[in-house]
Length: 271
Length: 233
Image 1 (cartoon, rainbow over the protein chains, first blue to last red):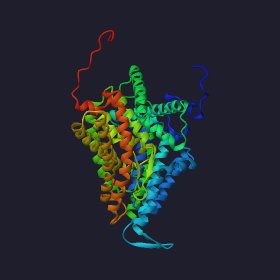
Image 2 (cartoon, one colour):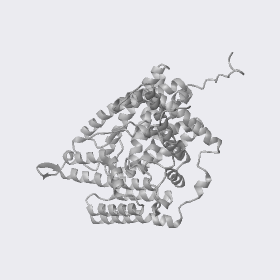
Image 3 (tube, each protein chain N blue to C red):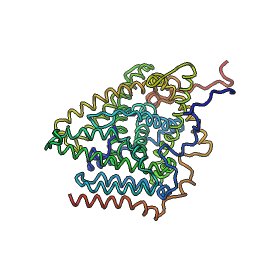
Image 4 (cartoon, rainbow over the protein chains, first blue to last red):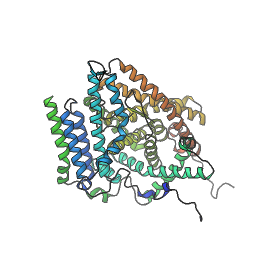
């Protein structure tokens, strides 16, 4: 093929095999990045459970959690601006939180001329605070862990092999799916289709079945190539052994959930 | 549909987490038998596809959860109920762990609604409808459409049930309103999901019927045509 059209900006630099990192991963050296993934996952889940178990009236406890998140973010060299921009994902839930003071039942208070439910106000605060802390914790995990490490971490946490296998292929095939969708779009455009904005959806919807099949056939080839290189349903044993969490790493990672649990227990006792 | 941290209280979330864990363990045991060389890449692709379509989010303002396509029916049709439920669950776990979509502490609730309830409702309908409807592309499309629509609404009512059990804010008489809003919004989403599921499954069934689990499970495996050496002349 000579004289191929100049690549569009979106297509440059997309290689299918490069999917070990994901959009949220921040490639910087830091102690948090070096921590074994299974320790990070466990710490993050326990931290979130402690946050959710905290009674909503203990406002100071949530400030404590926020400080904890900020400390980890600083240690992981993740910027506050990046964190805040990415946490917009929970916007739909925050909207619900703002509706609650009007919907809630029970005792009501007057705030600048509006009659608001006290229970609803607390409920709204509860969702905003706990939701935001949970999102920030998962963003920190995402920023410091590659997808490959994530799956190895789940594997080491005794996640059944069928589950890690589906997760491996899911993350691998996301790139295949995006790549096929882009190729089909280029094919459509080069045949004179000139979709703008929402009208692209029509062409996409009509071709969704074809996209699925094309992605499957490409994915099947990827799978067969993996099989022929010795894939047996699990990532190579070399990966499993190297870099497993040491006792020191478990202890280092435990500081976050232990502090959070301490805050949560204090909050439960005090309220 | 992703429930964020703090919407449902801790004890109810814990009970549903245990429930989801038990059900998923069962799915793992049954799914292992299904997962062969043909189903493994398909399961991965179904999960990737569901992951991609769940990115399209529509906030439902008065109900507080986002509405989006769920993919339970697609998974049940293409990879069967056991592996299908696992696919949706894997999507939810990855979304909760790294994308912050749906709280980690609420994972049990989210898995119960979308992975278990959605896939189970879809598969029961698929198994029933495929027996009744004619074995034609239209029959399969109708099955896909109806099962997708019903599974989405069923999953949304799962959320209402959980909110009734352990919602952190007492909505009083508004719970019926919540149920209505959720059902209405998800009826619309279900139509979209039904169309996408029907087109996708119909295309796959037309070109590679061997890939559709639901067709395989019902039909006793027809003897594969043995190609004559040197091809048909």
